[in-house]
Amino acid sequence: MLTRLIMVAAVTLQVSSTGQDDQPTAPSPERIKAAVERALPLVAKGADGYVGKRNCFSCHHQAVPVVALSLARERGFIVDPDLIRRQVEHTRTDLDGAAESYRRGRGQGGGVTTAGYALWTLEAGASEPDETTEAVVEFLLGRDEKTGHWLPLAKRPPSEASPFTSTFVAIRALKAFARPEQRGRAGARIESARAWLAGAAAEATDTEDRVFRLWGLKLAGAPDDDLRAAARVLRDSQRDDGGWAQLDGGDSDAYATGTALVALHLADDLATDDSAYRRGLEFLVKTQKDDGSWHVASRSRPIQLYFETGFPHGKDQFISMSATGWAIAALALACPRPR
Image (tube, rainbow, N blue to C red; front, side, top):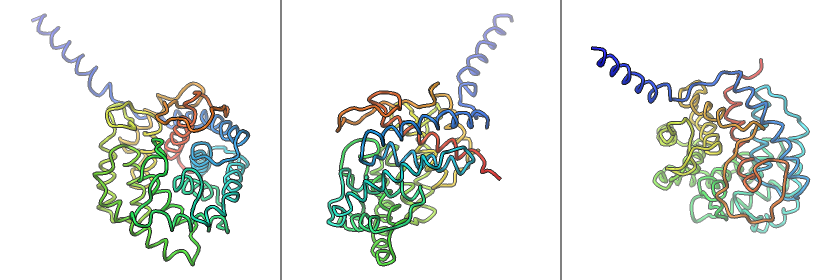
């Protein structure tokens, strides 16, 4: 009898240790808020540090931080408006210098991805359309017309390798900055992209693809059935630890997890108190470094000489800066708007 009781207790303990107790739990509002507050100063330091070292716009040190900081400010976090202004001015200065190249259809290094992310930065910073944004929109309207969507120029994963990313940022740019005389052509390009996105489910093979396919469908006005199907595929790729991995079979990281959560919330209306979202938040809170950052290893070959921006993680700092920005965005969205 005693032996049987011991065996039952052992089985019970084993089930407990491999069952619900191992599943990520929902972080408290206090932990979520503290995680955002720890990360914000470091992102500010990195963004300004980049501006002090380089004249060119970057997706990782301007676009993602400005989007994340703007979302955090909407949720009541203290964000220096001058910090956002400096990043927007840096972006606009770079675009102004390349305006003639955009008018001629050449654009800048990074092609559509750079152009789209740059205009997203201006949108998040509440910039008004002008002659330069008109030139960038004209570049996007003339680019990749025969494909029905937009293609990345580089192969630098995750953010500069996916046609879903380049298509999403192009759609976003056209919707935000096309002038009245450009809107007819913009609408036609967006409709073509919507059709491609709807039929390209099998081509979305990693988290970056799935995130920006879903978000692109949302911006392009796809039917609810298409949105639900795309969201289901993304949600079903969540891992047991609560996070998402950039590549199927890889380890979860803050970049993939942050982008997935933000897209599911903003494009599919996934509630931030949904179990999937809460598990993702717990993953982010648990994996944040003591300095406030999230470290993600780079998968891209460097294309410029290494330099420091004040953000940690050495040669992984660019993807880690993006990851930290997306983590801030995902966490901030789970916080209530100030009354």
